[in-house]
Image 1 (tube, rainbow, N blue to C red):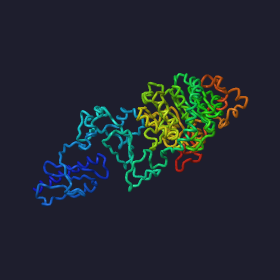
Image 2: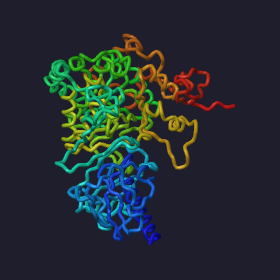
Image 3: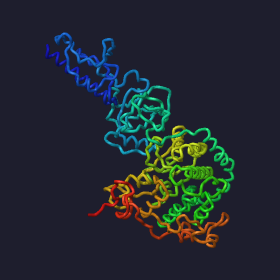
Image 4: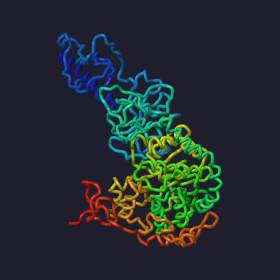
Length: 620
């Protein structure tokens, strides 16, 4: 009899542990809620409505009942803090995975392959991280009518592919949550629908940046709240009024005049093989050598710039851009507030004022009805980017399936979520939905003033329009459209690109462009491009005006006015006097730092970053 009782005890406790394991699997870490079950042979599994410490429960010794073990009614040890007054619910091992209390919104669960799922539902467009051993499945919760045909509500369905798992889903809400944030909880509550996440943190909502304190209760915070120092900042009334009076109102009062002046120039830029598409750039004189390098670099690769339209923010840049053979627009009134000098650093006052020009130019081109590719001037092309967006045979990203395409920025901070797009390179298909987005962003310019950046406000408004209006955004593959994040962080990729090491079999490095983002100053951008072998500007043209380069007489005779046809250029049949003076036939390669990416070894140069090894291996 005693042996039979011991067997019953062991069997009951083994099933108890199995039940606990299911609880652990569903995501509880420090504690699990275990529903009691009455076994058919009289064995009882411990029950508790509150959390139970895993180790205490699993390691508790077996004990016999008060009658010394002679009775058939034996039990596992009582759960901690369990009293006789607590009600024990009874059920059978065939109970559903989820209790009746969640039946109105979840009845079952499936697990499907993450890569397969993201391929089938690629329209969300976000930059996907690589699947790993602890992030290679997608958890799908089913309502009772969306359960797959070949499924069970008793345990997770692991045998289904994505198509099978979603075959009965008439609605699906996809939630993206940061992996490896092991201290987070994800709560799902049956309630009137919300298309936003209500973020809670153990912090003081008024203290920025956030400081996590275990003793504080979870409090509702704004989605940009983070422990990192940069955060989203709400404009105050003074900032908003300043934007209205000094920027928005003057622009709206005169935009029709700007459009009439821009229309014939835009028509020329759009009349190429890339029909009705314009490449939009904006520059002041402080950044003009970057514009010259872009032109000279494209000339060296024999890439046409006939679709490029430069918005010059001062007379010097207008003269320079036209001298380079580019379609150019300048309006003194429109750009009166834009400084001529370059920004000393990211986010300073000059930078904040200059970035409004990035807002005007795309808004005006969009109002004229053209598709456009906006790009910063710290850019080089390996291949013509419009070939990518106008190539219907490109199956990787299926161009023109989306309303907007953006280069990935690489910064995965909270305020860039979920896209982390870079506003220095993005393609827009002109439509009612993209025009409305740009209209909304235009009137949100006070966010630019309050956050000292163009990118975070752009992505904030973009995310809302994707949710509310169905604007489809696609983040381009990082290795096909690389930038400063690669240069500063991804040395493996840069070594492939610089031919320092060969990529593994099956990996092809063939980018379309390179964008020197993530770089503190213009001076460093020039140094980095010189090391990469992508700088094609004569030294005497850096920071110079057309008059400086060609002289008074040369400038007057070669640079067209608005009423004169643009001169022949390398992109329409021949070089201009300015490109002949400023562009080198071969790249101007120079070493500056031994530890930053370079086309040649720079072992004798100083290190830029303490503790980082030389980019090129030192031969012994």
